Length: 123
Picture (tube, rainbow, N blue to C red):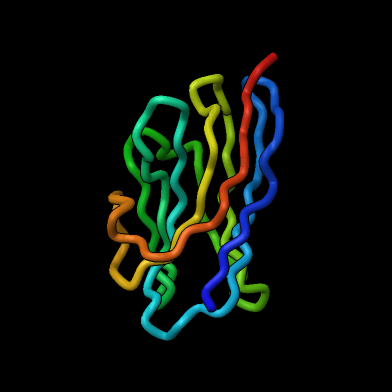
């Protein structure tokens, strides 16, 4: 079955960087895109980035453009999220998800989800 496993979270100081990994397995041929989301306590799940598996086109919301970079290693079946210039406002649980649709900011468009990895930005 489809499995997504996030890793790479942790505690980082403001201004620091982290690279999250999303190891995928069992992806079905109808899966079109992989996205990254985050959710802080009491807040809605927020779309951060997405990569289209057919041609590696990417999407970012304006809120993270220039700070976050999505990429993938086709051979390792892993999607990465490089996060730079982190602030305490980036503290959240980060999830990757797979969709049968084109990239979308909306969690409802994604069928398969990982368990999440915690990112805490604090001095």
